[in-house]
Image (cartoon, rainbow, N blue to C red; front, top):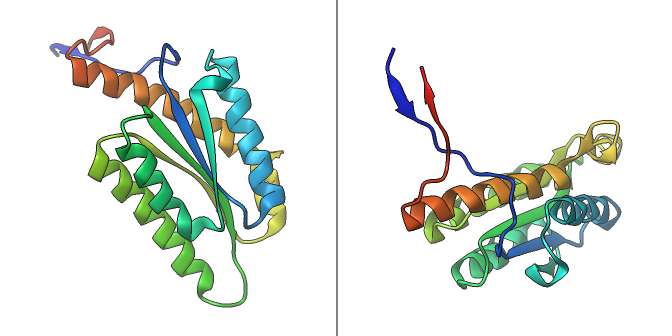
Length: 168
């Protein structure tokens, strides 16, 4: 076993700026996800003036605005929050799949972390459980991921590669 360099993002805000793109569809659930994301940012020292929230009609529209924000040079990471709840038609599959692919594509196209904080659940009860209920708050988790990824990417870009060195 040798020594390896280990690189991880830290949960520090610094001067990082964040965009949150939120879907109005299933707004009761999305509001809870947004509240969780904003609370997590605040707990980690991100000030309100370093966060902007963009509302879109539904989950299908999240990737376009996320890509715009990521490519603007104004944000160090973008968080997408929303909820796609399965219904009786294939609409769920199209919307959930397109939203996930679009968010991933936005990150890859811009090199800026774009975090998928969109719930894809079988019913509203599952969504509520994951939006501040018994299963935690996935909006909060998405914000924490954005913090970590923004810091890691900043280190990769500037060559500092903050992180610790460990042994394997």
